[in-house]
Length: 304
Image 1: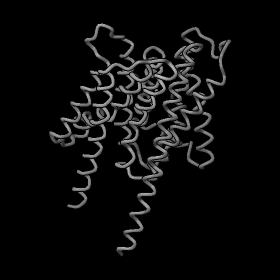
Image 2: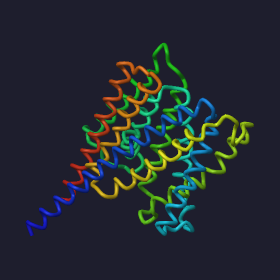
Image 3: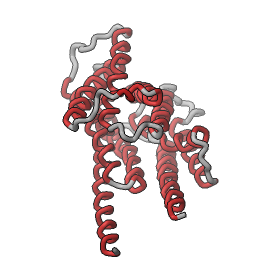
Image 4: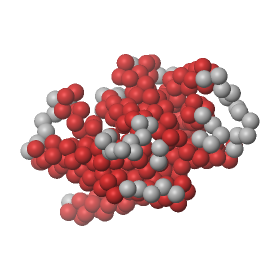
């Protein structure tokens, strides 16, 4: 029995190592994809960028769902909770694109990575979860980090940072309602349904803006990289969460902040301020601690 337990421990460690590696690659893909989104802002509007991301994602995720023989004719795709998730994902992506094209890449990435902190706070109200003073302290520290990043009282405040805050709220709503999503609906199917729901919106956005769907001077290499990196990042993220323990893998999602800081400096010549770096550090520490406390609480409940 001890031998079997030892084998399980070794296997779980191997799976966690693979999961962590996939999570790191996923976050690198997302950061690189965000970089190409910002580059594409030189020849595409936010509406056009979203149109290409949604269109490309729809094709990629539909093909993947078909290859995996997942259900695309799913009546539950129209459940109210899923419709809320689709809308939140769509609005979050639109707001994030607006932010990326207008303010430093590292600021948008850092603010949106505070999503788990906002979800932890909202779960108290929505799910009536009991929260200890430790978690409340972590939540407050995380929000202090967000304030340091956006600097609402600063003289050089760029109100475009509110797009990053809007994306943070939308993504937090998405993550919150995901807890209520039927677990047997496959991830690729949900991604496909999300793209289908978003397609009419993004098409209407381009049309009402009076812009062309395929404007002249478009750099197709940049657009392709933007779509492929975002899709690969999403798939690797889902895979990493399924092969290992969430408590071991999820903290590494914050590596996206580091990747975005590096890319922002190397590609766009961004110079993060000390307050921005301090805020990013507080968000990272707060988020990782909240995940660690959830693991401890879950283990103690299971032992009882």
